Image 1 (cartoon, rainbow, N blue to C red):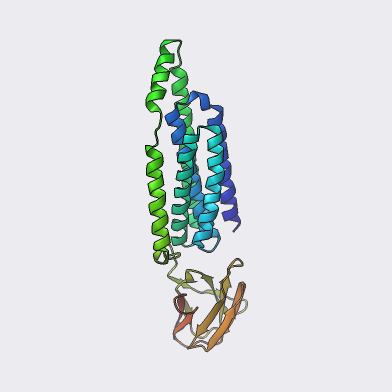
Image 2 (image 1 turned 60 degrees about the vertical axis):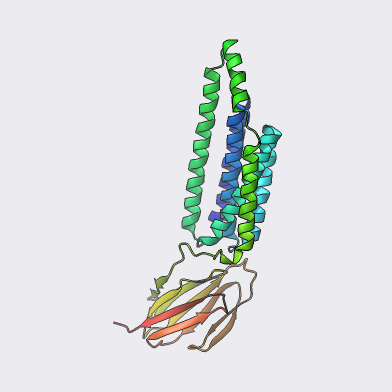
Length: 298
């Protein structure tokens, strides 16, 4: 969880630094470059925020989109103050689009440190490239800034590169389409289907002579889907429910006569001398299940 919150801080800091850098060179960039920087930054940062929020708040799609859009609003207000209102409009639409896409993708990816680190790395690389683009554009404008001849050239260049409302219209259409798709197809956006562990072997605690396994309980179901044990040694199964989970979970298993409510934190079940076979655990209809496979000890 600390990695998730740290990632949010990194995203905000990099976005803020890039805006500070561009603000100092605002007058040395043509309007097209300013529009590209503001729009791309708002889209990328909001998408990263939406992704991280979905990974942090147990795949809550609407909450993640809400926080992502809130971040987009802050970024847009900053862009609007630094640049023109038209650029701020593009940045606002791009930010909302990024937040929607980021939340949807974050919901589909299994929550762990790996996707967070990958998202952070991609974001940092993109922000670095955007920074280099800003440096290149300001150096280009400075090099071409010569008396009279260059002045007229610069004015004509700025007029030529002046962005219209076509970009805002395209972004607006994109926001409407993505929002409708997410709203109407939300039940088909399955939680944590990308990178979800399918099978895992239990670890052996020599000191206590126990087979230990931890099963994560999330809105995506139970992970891993299957855990492998050996017969003849007691099983310690830990069903971990996130502290921020707002659902009332109930774990059942017909084979083991289990029917217990799960509380936030670690819920420990001990299975003495398990016989070889497959045991199924359910969270309820449509909420997911997992299996314990017990194989004969070698």
